[in-house]
Image (cartoon, rainbow, N blue to C red; front, side, top):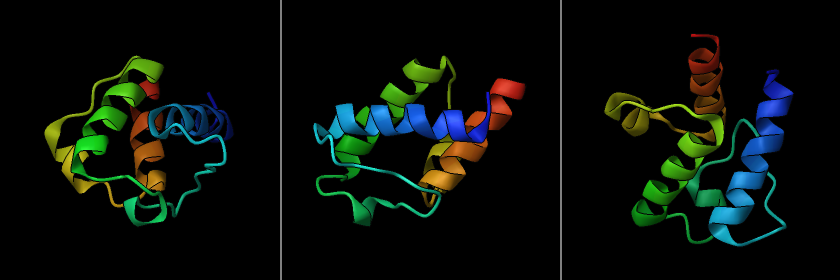
Length: 81
């Protein structure tokens, strides 16, 4: 799966989780860029991303992600794994 394909799927997950069809995430998107992305929604988002890609993030990965690009990097690694 290419990074572009991952972002297509991530956009779908973000739109579903935040119930907002206008969301478009990029490498530099952070929680501050999306209304309602708080710590509780972060848990829902992580779970939805794990389900979408059939992967599991470890706690270190979850707390170290600073933007969606880093999330995509981890997904790429997991899928290539």
